[in-house]
Amino acid sequence: MDRTRVIPRQFSTAYESVHLFGRIVVVGADEERLHALRLLIRKYSPEYAEIGEKYIAASFRRTVVLRFDIEHLAGKCKRIPPDAAGMRPLA
View (tube, rainbow, N blue to C red):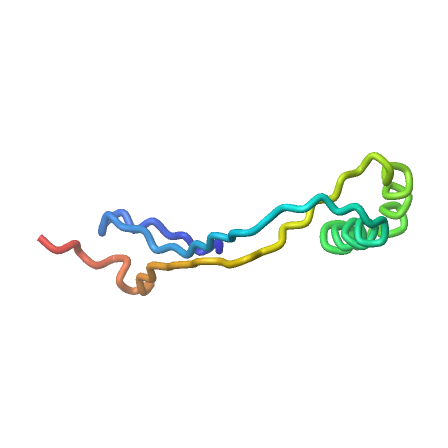
């Protein structure tokens, strides 16, 4: 959802958006918490996985993990073709 484009000449914006609805749950099970923390390391610091494991071990007991259980979502978009961006607005 990162393709927002302001079209100043048309007084408009091309956008995409999504809204998620659901419940946030505090994860209690150690296995699920550990898995979630490892997924974060794999995504954001894969080249530091070994050091990441040490960080997890050192702060695991004081780390709270939240899980967002999505119940439904809604999305919308307004697309403006790239070649239309330079069009003159209607008078």
